[in-house]
Image (tube, rainbow, N blue to C red; front, side, top):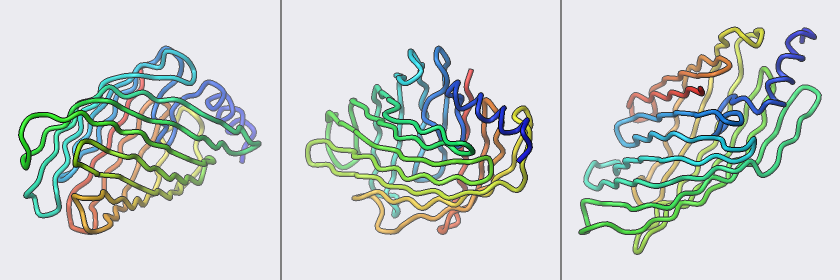
Length: 214
């Protein structure tokens, strides 16, 4: 690894700049993110009011595999960096992500209060990325606990201000709406302030993810 790349990567880590799936940006920044597929459509924005804390609105639309049940969740979400390890050529993080809001569904009337606490653990170098994420979506009579894991590698090393291509595979599952584990291989293009990734999952559905920090 070239010294210039190590220095740039270390500087980005120290500033808290978003990388392969960090759920917030650097201090006093806004982050916008979208995760789009036929059964899962999520969009959120948050403001990092410290280097470790961010808050903002989130909208999530969920649909069962057979398309008979839907959920629409609107919440205020809070993100907290619980722990960070800056290693010589890597970084590891533990995040808390939780929200409070209301959920609607096509199989019950009105709205219900929903809480959604979760934990994300990730590890990354300039060439390898791994992440595990779990979040509980709970309301009266509703349990849609969610879990996902990701593994990825970059095709080549780049300087900090260049676009880097990655190959990422994600497996995810949600209780109560899906009886299968969705696996999606994706191509990701990542830059210092944004990423774009796209793929097709095991049920032949298109998946598109976007993130931008400003």
